[in-house]
Image (tube, rainbow, N blue to C red; front, side, top):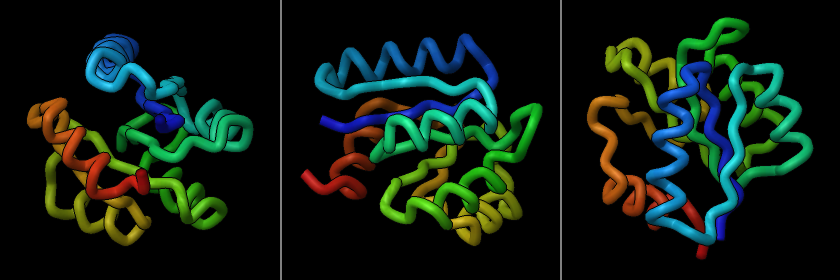
Length: 122
């Protein structure tokens, strides 16, 4: 189905989110990156169609990383997932080229399915 990358420095979140996605979308190929450096490497190697991106990571902001990825791979859909649902983050994510912005506390797999239908070409 889709090659997907989850970029988040919190292992528990990545594992839980990956499990939920795998159960709902069994044909989705899902990989993980713990920081921006690893995300850059995996984007080049795997060419995911979809990235779920955290904003706050230890080595680089997810917003900066989104802008870098979008400048090189504009076809990749990037959905920002964050604990920081602030207007300035939403605006920065939009300016960086993010395709969507979801507060982590509001994530529902049914909503992810709607996002996939909206953002992905089937």
